[in-house]
Length: 102
Image 1 (cartoon, rainbow, N blue to C red):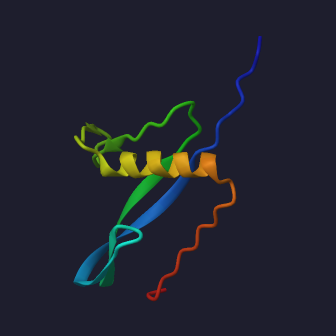
Image 2 (image 1 turned 45 degrees about the vertical axis):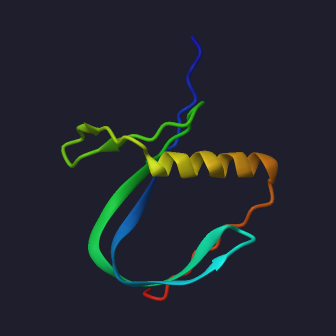
Image 3 (image 1 turned 135 degrees about the horizontal axis):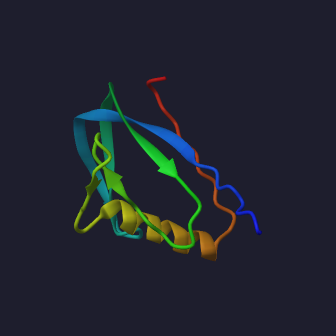
């Protein structure tokens, strides 16, 4: 009998925030994107994100009772697809997260 290799689940806490203000600084013609400035307040609510190994990209949303939630036009999944394509093209990516509030 062949034993399955146990997959590790990674759990991340994603704190909620409230945007206190949002300003459009300018439009970057080269990147074709607006540069923004925002001030946020972190509040005492959070989402739990679980990441598991998979052969394909799946994004599943569940409510507090673990009932599956269907989201049409899922922006998170779209952004993950863009990220995955970027990683395949360029393996030398660095992710840097900064917070003023911790």
